Length: 339
Image (cartoon, rainbow, N blue to C red; front, side, top):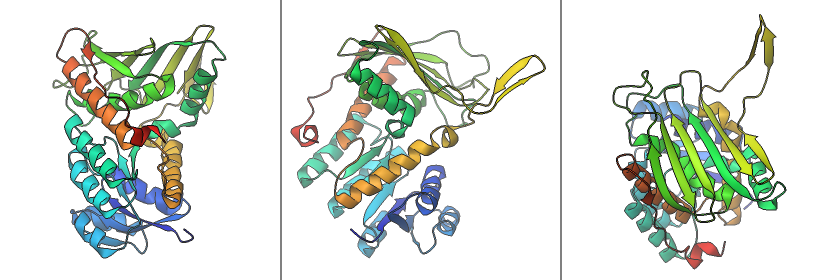
């Protein structure tokens, strides 16, 4: 394909608007040709960042227009299944922001529809796989330079969360990332999930019981704990410590200007995901564009998205249950295993 990939962006909220700016300013080989957004104000603001793009109120309109070679879905998760099935029917490559869908049942319907079509078209937006430090850690684990991986300690901390953030979102909107990246890092499959509650943060909103500690057991014997903490106040922090037989590795530590002044040491921390994972988002979208132009999927597949949906369902169950919840995952279909 010699001309730019024409992308229809579905959803012009915070994430969709960010992707529109990214494609317009940072991505090569692609252009935003259409913005699908029912809210007129958001649609207008997004179109201002996408010169030459046309606005639509629904996905059917842009699919019928012939203006799109590919689709980027950035709507809330409850709308993903319908949009994905429509894009699959049109035979277009699609980058779908996480989650694939919100439930295992709907995710499996998407997987079945993609397999029925005979070609992988869906890439799921788990951007941590495109973060350079996560890539380096995965390579270290794979080459066993420090011996076998024994444990992973992960931390996901937010300064605060909006009023719309409820208890189940600790799993479905936050730990969801660990359910994808941990098996990818460790080369294993999640077999059980358990949630432990430490002392509650008195500064947390009344509707939330947090922080939580999520414990995952993988089929290769690796044990994982994830601190999920959304009212910590100081900033946004996502970091991981890997414990090996002969060493320890850490990623996600604060970096940048270090200030030593008045008997204190300080280094700035991120405020939110838009700065912590900016490069990862850029690399993810660029990889998707390059893959779509070649006719391949360059990142997490629809089946990867299904596996995460199963883990999330187990994690939500574990929020209200003592002890581990078993995660039952099918064998990877040959349709996906061959990639």
